[in-house]
Amino acid sequence: MRRLFPVTDQTPARSQDGADREWSLDELADAYAYPALAADGHWLRANMVSTLDGAAQHDGRSQPISGETDMRIFGTLRALADVVVVGAETVRQEGYRPARAREAFAARREAAGQGPAPAIAVVTASMDLDFSLPLFTSPLVATLVVTGAAAPSDRVAAAKAAGAEVVVAGEGAAVDAARAVRELAARGLRRQLTEGGPRLLGQFVAADVLDELCLTISPTLTAGGAQRIAGGPSVTVPHRLAPACVLEEAGFLFTSYRRI
Image 1: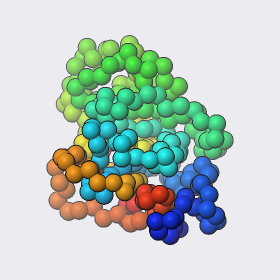
Image 2: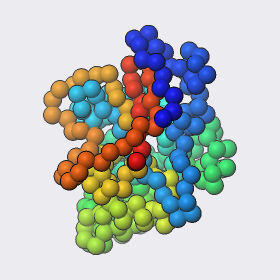
Image 3: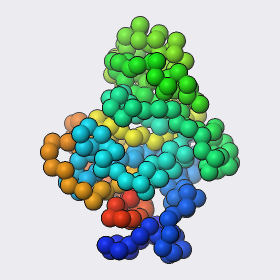
Image 4: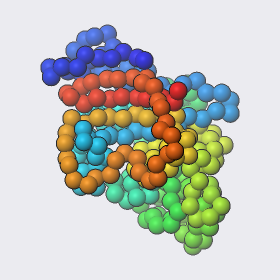
């Protein structure tokens, strides 16, 4: 377990040397570094935010329960990943755009053998996506669309015409979560990050392929009927994770739990 920062109502963002200053991007990147992977290995981590009463969204979006440091960590996790895996509904609701290259992480990515920015992989059974959006027409790295073998052929053709790479990860229309992880890894996208939504994360949990959960606990209450961070059928036996990192700033807790 990495350093646990003190938690009081006066605690500012603290660096690893204990100084009362904002964490640098290098410090965040070190804290959230992917583990060393075997030649054929892969690692799937999720990044989610939840209120104190378990809501993953407010008015259908995660931004209202997020904060400045949460967004810095969000950007850091993206900058460390080979691919960002996201559900189609989240793409539609959150207005996803292509990942961008960031100079602050350029040397780190080059040393890790990565391109300038992670690819975005959109998981969809229906292929109900607007392929005229910048996510598909002007990404720095070609966007991938992960779907099943029985996906509508006209929508598959539209995705390819827009420049997207279509990845088949299921025999029917639906996507097999475990196969999606393997198919992306086979393309060299081994450091994987999913940003949800809750239904997609639930599929990864049910398939027992999630290696790490990076969870921001927002010091807010919303009540209502918002989704939890993971939805869908429950697992037979709860999956136990071990804490790897806990940071605190302005009442937000930034946690990381890894597979035991």
